[in-house]
Image (cartoon, rainbow, N blue to C red; front, side):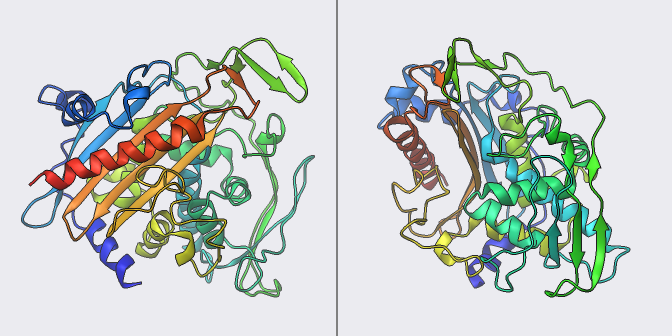
Length: 412
């Protein structure tokens, strides 16, 4: 626990001058260390860098420098950054749902005594395709809670945990929250891995919170809801991807349309991570309304290794240390360098690999944000499970993270 407290102390230092605010573009007027690094050292990276357009590669790198008072200063650099170019964000959206669920609970607790992230949360069903949850065998008390869902969603990217948070917050509040945080190229329209689409994605389950594990002392009851309003329409370019896709056993000879799916730009993903790790560096109106304990929960879940978690517990054979760490770890390919902690949320689906990370080596004074998206689908067919994750994607992510980390070690 001491390690997490120490890292939390680094991330909670008061913010100073924010250099990223005037636009990432201004940083490009000076030398771009990211471009220089990619030109100079392409070991393990050359295959993708030779055809970055085919791989839809985007990289956003933000240096964090601390002054003598320990205040962080940011400067961002990018490679092929295209905020309006669509990519499927997959599980990276889980950080938004986790943070906004804790925020909603914090607001409710102002008028409901005893309501906390650890309160028992039971989900019912009220529309076609919805499912109930009354037990959670991975929890110490056998009951689900917002805190437990947050841990599972961020630690090992549990899809059901995200879906329960989506149902609690609801699509209207989720998208209003994204807009309030200044995330202009993002939207949340559906649950994950359950084939969620209209009208089911507009319907959310009834939810009840209890003060006791026997679920007899009701604290708060939220009825089933329906969102009738229009979905947000961020200005995104081509949202049709590939040349064909499988729909069950049927092959459809046209690109897959993602216009009714979740969206997040790379700058929005990194800004969300900053809102969790460095809230004081953002304008007050664009900060999350969270208590210190909420921030601590999010940060621990973002940085923990599966074997370090006590509840839920994970088998190291199935969940190696870098299972949920693409940058530096390659999704289980390699261990992290000694002393390094990675606060991140990744995504993997439809041939896209995304990692949104803050990499910290406290002993060596290294601290930076690195967000990357990569597309590995040589045959152009979606839903066929023939993606080059292992051959190209994971090794590239690991090696890119390592190159940036090594370069950071050499800086004063």
